Image: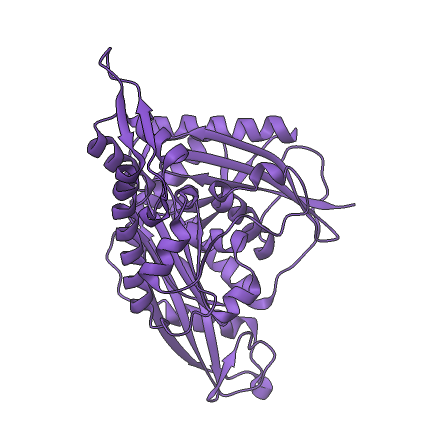
Length: 420
């Protein structure tokens, strides 16, 4: 049975995750290998130390190669950071073909027209996501190819990022010995892993709380409507604990993971947590209520920013599915009841879904949501090439017309970077 293999790479502020997965002709997705390595070469999602990042990428991918028995050549990598910007754009063209039939080339011309926006010289378009096509005044069209019309309009969601940030990601991956098959916005990738179609249709907010950044994506009517990346996340919570309780960073991380609560009202009985003293000093005793108050203050700040982004999107009253949290920061107990209070909507923690076999249990954790999302995005876009040196027969699959156009745009972006 023919199958295709793709590799997802999540280069985070605190960790790098590599996931090798395959999809067979029956559409079953199997996780073949997982690798994870600590990372300290990034700050708020942006590469600040090339060598440290390269080493982390190499270690994570080598672990995944060992588990899967596959030699990796190319990866689908995520991009985030507070340099990410999103905007809406519109375009319009006329159809002059025989019988006024809309072709792929017409869609491509329209999307190119939507990209005629003024950008700073240090910014580059990462994604162009069609939200709606309008043909001769008829709206709500998702794929206009084959229809007849004289005038076609489109509204798109454009995501941009710093040229230097994207270029440094390319450089790190290539110096680690791999090719970049695609660059994907991390909240978009995470959405493939933890959201289902019903949630996207009803309206949902995805909040991916990582180490250095919190990624926000808002969906409604199965279309991504708004994206944002903010530079406040799990590392800030750790810093607050470290400074507020005068403990070491490792101790702060342990306190957060083992005793942390994001909602102080959940604490029914006070607990005294012993912490070893520094350099022979006597041990400390920390009250669980004090720890919870420190964590809650920072988590409330993150949720207030999420509330601002929801209001900015214009879809505050159309989010029936509430909010879904993922990422390592979502593992703090009490985040859902806190979100109920701050945002006034239902909340749950999302884990990777849509996987069939292999190492499914190993990635059944929010910290792997972005890495799994990179894989699922590559498989759904059907643009990933076979990244192995093993003798395998890739399936001859093709995407929808609109997907093919978007893939062409992605290839143009990759070629642009190669020319730098």
